[in-house]
Length: 312
Ligand code: SF4
Ligand code: SF4
Image (tube, rainbow, N blue to C red; front, side, top):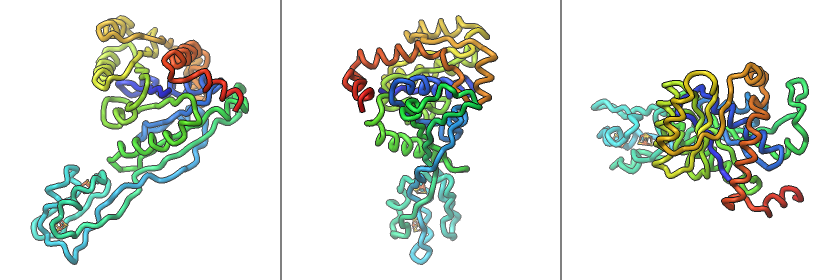
């Protein structure tokens, strides 16, 4: 079962929820946490995980041959990313950070003057939980360590093709999913392409919001997107005792989406957050129990899968 955790706006506690749910699930079930917030991945920080590099994400980069180039400018006219600068009478000039590797310029060049090169646009990391009593992770047993794996994508500094890094991160994670019962995907905030790529092919989306006018506005946008994508959604309200809860409740009623969890504003949560331990441990346990039951009911996870976990 793939569960995405998203939120219309940054700073709502999306990563806090994703890490805590994945941590809670891994106490019993093999769980993959996939950090697809590639411009600002922080799940490893929230769980005090040291990431190891798995591989670079590379993409096509055009290489211009000045021997044969006729300075026609067609490559520049073709590029929708404005990655090829052309001044009449000069050779084309590439801005690699803007190139998304689509290859259109190479196809369009009438003189075959563009050949294939590559560039590194990001990195995929992975990491395991560690037993760190000094951090308060006394609850991290060897079983939990074995059950849990973090995959984390990170776009190269200055690169604009972040969606390709999200796709590569999802693709890498999908190769490992057979060994895991649950995949929790932490998306970027907003409704842009990175978020859409992270949400694709998920079974349930948890939309994290806060009870403020801005929180409501952005939640509405993300719920409209989920409706268009045909994805099942539930709402989690963070800092539920600050602001106006009715704002979110009214929107949830209007859009027919259930509020599944209200998280209070508590000093203890902030302390856990700053210490790099699962901030909502305990608060999400009922939600995780419900998610596992739903997965069983919908045949996304079978009893046989669960038995295999117990007797690998
Ligand atoms: S389309 Fe080809 S020939 Fe024309 S400017 Fe670009 S690289 Fe040169
Ligand atoms: S590969 Fe695509 S994005 Fe990159 S320079 Fe060529 S046309 Fe532009």
